[in-house]
Image (cartoon, rainbow, N blue to C red):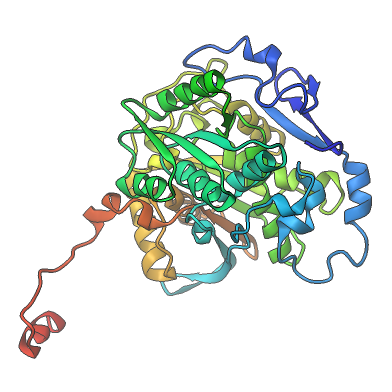
Length: 418
């Protein structure tokens, strides 16, 4: 952590330097109860007045920012730009369209395709900052719990940085994601249990062995990596803010990162309003959105095809719900069938094959369109967070691969004319 920033607990408000704490607020951590979202998640606060003066120079943004993690380096908790991985992380495409099913729309849709990160998911943004911090502080072993994407991400980023990665995963995680983790050379520890079991065990092991833990809603730097997507969207939209952003939600960390990025831009005076951010959860895993306005948190066992957002206990519940309340965010749930339909629609209409957890955000947009909730002339961003190649089994019921034919033209005619 640099002298330009410090940590603040989102629950009690106490502030800390990096020398004092690396993970949760020590005071609030003592109050945590098994089965409930953890308190004490730390938020990184910067010297916004000084940074605003430096970043707001008239010639600073004369053209789109190509590398937001470098051009907004003042808003990252690092010392040296060279500590970032050499892999191209971020700088992902933002595709613009105003049609749906061949019909012209009275508003614009922008698809932010983060499946084009090095390990094919949004999680590389967080892994990059955690890895860079570890490099600056002489840390060589990084551990994470994951349903697959965060694990393959930290494994790939560590491989590029010559660091050691240890990944705890539920044994039920998709084979493609487990394969990625092993191919990158990480130590994989399958856990006979849920993501939450893997999460708790990874923390216990980190404390025992002294490993540096990447877990989201535990390590505050993951939010700082994920927020970079907001800087990119701001830049790619000609230094303006979209009207609405649809974000898939599980633990609540990605949506918090999107909020944090735009909040940082607000605090340094580059923007004057927060976009409406829509959190989209699977109906079978709605433990965050269902509890936002309740007095007592009640968890239901998660059951959805969207494994990356399948969470019993949303670890970043307090930060995510706090942001949604503060900035009048919106949220909704979508069924597994709506998620699969959205994945098919994206693939066939846009040429983007995205995994179910990612397609949930697009399903949310389609639901808003169906219910006439999108304003005319508005700009609406959908955050697509992972490649469909990471989970091929979920979409099998939506496709049919034909049987092989004999190698002759007559057989082709039978298929072509059928």
